Image (cartoon, rainbow, N blue to C red; front, side, top):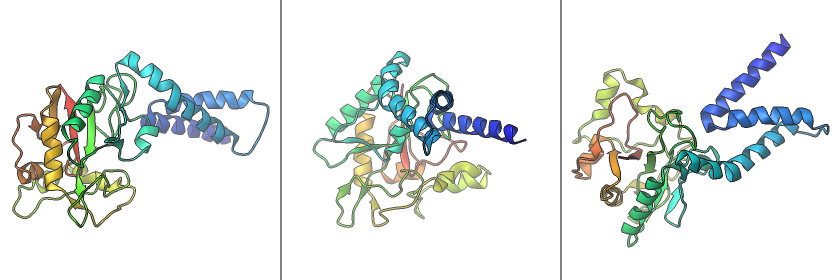
Length: 266
């Protein structure tokens, strides 16, 4: 019975690591084999072996192999940064080269502003159609979530965010705005606001949603000829007075988009 439990535990860990990072399950198997080959025993041997292999793979090996699958890491600059570096450590920061070009052109367009792109989940490095859960469509290198823009109490634009993960703190509809959120929830799409459970903690509660900053960011993204679609919640589209055929509604089967912007290539 103990042996069966141990096997089930290994399988569970393998599956979870694969879901979270794509490569974690394979690395976990390699670490189990390596641990058996290592004669020397020391404290936390299994954990240290796995973490060592994983970090070497994530930081050094995966970026070299990913271009074979027409993907590359999001290129960090002074104005393009991850909202949370766990995105990088979990290998959820890979895109098609055209998306890196779109980000660069957007920041060039915004160079006279204080707006910087804080990105969230993109795609895994390998294999089309491999799901990047919990997202429905981040599986081809063409998709990227970007944080909203906020400002401090003095009205100055800041790169800070309102949750640790970057997700789950919503800019909800005002009383005079179209409320697609309630409509979806009433129709039974219970998952529509589930990102509220994955904030990993709310922070910087004094920050306010920046109408001007977010509109500037979206307007700049919309200029790019390689952009296929941009998703944002209907009430924010209304509030920011945005009008462009590339701005689409994602549907009730997805999750609400008033905590982030979703963009994707053609």
